[in-house]
Image (cartoon, rainbow, N blue to C red; front, side):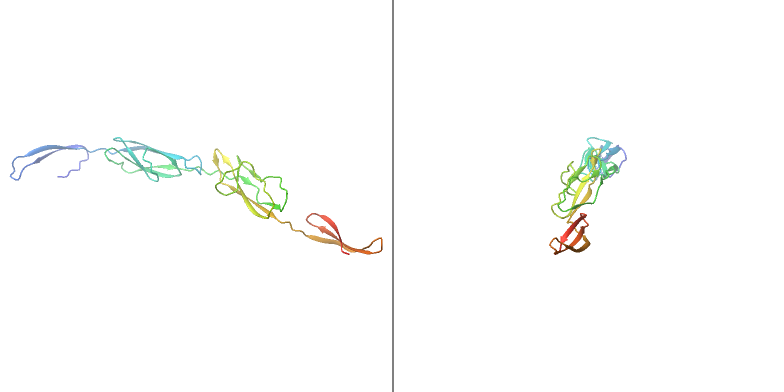
Length: 232
């Protein structure tokens, strides 16, 4: 005999032998346990968009001890920590193996990212130039890096060296309310100087000995200097 009561019930079972004699009667109690129920599920958002320090907590009742199963996490307690942004579903099981009907969710949302600082870029230097002013950026609690990711930031803005030509990139972030922004690139290029000249005049002058001196007056456009070239 199979029964499926919806509540705890007592059944009387009578059995007899094949001759229909010697009846045996016994009461059987079938206990129907109430499954655990979830009262609430709440999430705490991460402090920064780049961090995974959120949490989720479920409040449930039922025949203790209760165990918890979360999706996207291996936690088995009522509170799980170190969460990134996401949705976390939970089911609860009581001591009798009864499981909540369905699951409920906690939504952990990342805050908006901190904006990158304002930078002066690109920056151009001549080969061998003496650079006295560090790279410039505007923001709060700036940190300077030599790579787009990783590394340790410096609060001191770099002053590029110019011994060789070529491009290089520096990076800077800002920190607000304890959260660091993405890094903004500052592109630096060191170039060899290019010279351009123009002839202003040419002619022949007589020296004191009566010998002609051929000359050209040249303007160096880059340095704005006049150079007298002896072409004799």
